[in-house]
Amino acid sequence: MSHLSQSRPPAVLQVIPRLNSGGAERGTVELAEALTAAGWSAYVASSGGPLAHFIRRCGGTHLTLPVASKNPLVMRRNVAALVRVIRRFDIDIVHARSRAPAWSAHAAARATGRHFVTTFHNAYGLGWPLKHRYNSVMARGERVIAISNFVAEHAARIYGVGAERLRTIPRGVDLDIFDPNQVTGARIAELARAWRLPDGVPIVMLPGRLTRWKGGLDFVAAIAALGRSDIFCLIVGAEQRRGFRRELEAAITRFGLDEIFRIVEDCRDMPAAYMLADVVVSASTEAEGFGRVIIEAQAMGRPVVATDHGGARETIVPGVTGWLVAPRDRAALANGIAKALSLTAADRAALARRAMAHVAAHFTRQEMCAKTIAVYEELLFPDLVQITAEPEALRA
Image (cartoon, rainbow, N blue to C red; front, side, top):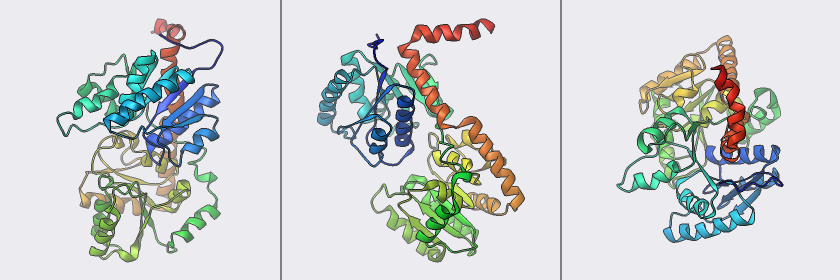
């Protein structure tokens, strides 16, 4: 039953472990901004992070709670804390975006009679015996949002989420920010100086957190197989697994690539970074639920080479807006990069137009947020949504 009063705007509480960099985190911020712009009240509970100030800046409220913890005692305390938050701010919808905090959020939503929504951000693995149950909380929403058809199929097949509850809403890119026409030459030059990039050589860039499954080691080996010294390669992303940067650096040295490689852990201007790149690579070794880098790069008109699995199959049109190559196949990755580097100026311009149009048609931030708010409205205003949908149903 809805607790929404006619005298106040609807209130949504998103719960996410932390607000560092990442697709789920940025999606949380973008939705909070869209909610406040639409006149709703936006709340986010997380353990904090550099993106938290964006919640406050857009008129939302950030609540610092230890929801990143997987400790059962802390998770139980989080239930009580979230119940207090729900009652204090009269929350209507609790939206969980990750498994550990989802258990606390689900219990708090049930205790207060509020609507519960989840987002599946990936096809979660089933390694240890209790993992299925641990993951299953993401299938308990009154509405379950999947960020790609790949993830939606997984939620339906493995966790039995029926079509009446399942909604597929792809991630979106902010075309006001990721627009090549908005990036000044000064911004590009500043990054090039900071990263000490050589002049006049093609730049091949792998953006993504420094963690093994993002495929950094395959990228290094593919560049070695390419056998070119007239290019420069960048790996851009913060270290997630301690020691993995050293492993990447050792591989670069082992292949004799120190002169043409650089690892950059801090980038606060990704649109300018994409503009520096002649080729953008997404080399994930495991299927990603979506892969935000792929649509950001296409929005900037850059050629993209990505591994052929997961959400990448839904965001790249092979041979039209980029290339898909076999996962963990370093020779195939090298071949894909070679194809992208071989484009003529005219070919690059044509690919850029196609890629930008593709993203604008299918993967915008505005559409992502509008569809998510529409899911909330299904729960809060079911009669209104049904009336609005009836004319189309009658025409059918």
